[in-house]
Image (cartoon, rainbow, N blue to C red; front, top):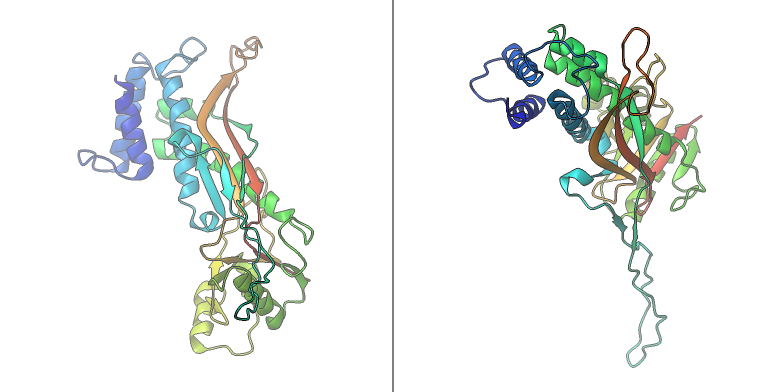
Length: 337
């Protein structure tokens, strides 16, 4: 079996662009399973004898999972409002460039006079983001897929969601660490308020003004958005709150729903329900993510650890990425008491 055929079908399934000869999801998954089994020498079983680096199934899975994570993350409209994402494996540059956003003062001139203070046009700054490996266990899921106990889409979802969950947590934890002393911000943009209409509107106006009058949007969880207060509430706004649980606009400013997530392995919400975020549309995105774009499957033999007494081996999938915050453009943080 040509490994490229397996990769092509798997990628098509991930992207929802399967060939016409496969008429439904079940057929697609069975066809892919058959390909994997053929690549595995005709066996449905994975064991310490046939699942190792250099084995066709091993190499294909190692190549597929980074694509699954990439497709899942770039398809998240909420985070792409805030994140500048680089995937090195897809040819993206490793370095980021932040232009100098220093304010320029326009002076009054008199004819015949040129006594104006000179102001240097900044050249901006290039920088890189440190990356590190993050890993999850995937071997058992893949064994179940080959045995027919789980379809490919379920397998894809289990692996991708585990890695994406870690990425989402790292991004949000970076945001949670922002204070008024964070470089590029101040108490004008990081506000602890009492949830008055004027406070939030002032913050929105500051963010817009700092970004040359750009349109701004307000991001928040459903509970955070539903706490918005307005003096004048139209019938359409009441319908928004009835149908969506929150106002679709705040004084003409669009609001964007931030779906809650659980912290990995818990039933605890990840996102704070007392925070609202104000961003300027088209401004430099503050969260920088670098994804090496390559996956690695390690087993305990790679580390020199012997096989366990019951002849099982622990397999770990790992992927390398890094997250950083850079506020070249102003963004608003509003926390309610």
